[in-house]
Amino acid sequence: MFGKNTVSQKAFPGEVVQAQFFPSQHPGHDQITTRLAPPLDAFLIRFPKVHRVESPLPVLTCVDPDDYKESTSPFELTWDRLGALETWADSPEKVLESWRNRFIFAVEDLDHGHPGLRLPQIGALHAIAAHFSVGKEFEPATIVLPTGTGKTETMLADLVYRRERKMLVLVPSSILRNQIGAKFSTLGVLPAAGAIPVELARPFVAKITKGISTVGHAEAIVNASNVIIATPDILKASAPDALRRLLEGCSILVVDEAHHITAATWSEVRERFTAKKIIQFTATPFRRDERKVDGKIIFNFKLGDAQETGYYRPINLRSVEEYGDQSTRDQRSSLKPSPS
Image (tube, rainbow, N blue to C red; front, side):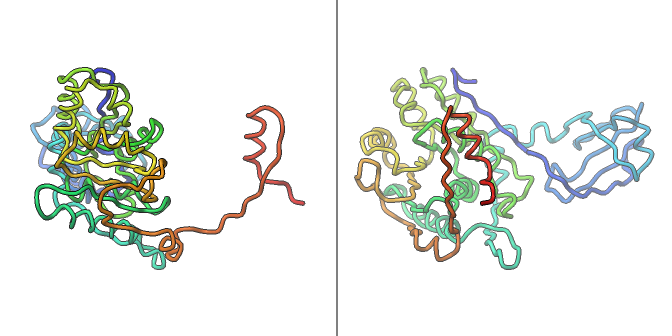
């Protein structure tokens, strides 16, 4: 907690894997091996009443020792010591280093049952990499992806693929701040899509819910996070010196739903982010104030493209008329219409 703002991490959400058991070199211990990457590839199981041994491996014990004698029966293990897991991904710098060369450009092939990223996501990632590969000062980049084509996952993929040091994500509402924050905390569908290993360390995510009052708080947030998520209004409510320190510490600004942010609000933040990397994600190149989203459009996946590739399906609308209080209307709307 920094002021009234939080930084959190879900380093590893867990996974169902096959494991093999072997006698260990340590007396009174068995060893478990998995196909996950270190340090999740090997564990020790300490037998009851056996002295602890010196080992960097995580150590488990059986909740009910009698269960462990029956290898064909399910049994429950509990942590005895975390070993190398205790410091495995305990800082933003370690998380960033663990991402090195771990991103996979897996391409979706639904006809053959292969998960992966969608073609517009792949195209956007390559466009972003190309845009920022030459020079040190960059024109703001705009990515146009229609709703439903995977805009948020493209942000997550870019974070891991290019290993951005500190990403500031600007969203138009507190609801989106919470939704995007949850996505970044788990890295969304990237593991299921095969774009990252399931055991890849998840980032430290800061959600700015109150204006930052001091430079010290801003510096602490920057130092403790990989990703910072805020709304323009919250940034405007921060002390000028604190906001300046926050923006100085970020390597890239990502604007989500850029068409919902007015030009006046956007310009205030952009002016403080001069000469740094900026990406705007939008479903349309026009803002709500009818002004065009500025910046260079480096990738434009049009609505017609999404329709041709089958990302959109026909929708059959059945209207429901119901009177009374709101809860009654909502309940009626959620029920299937009775057969006529």
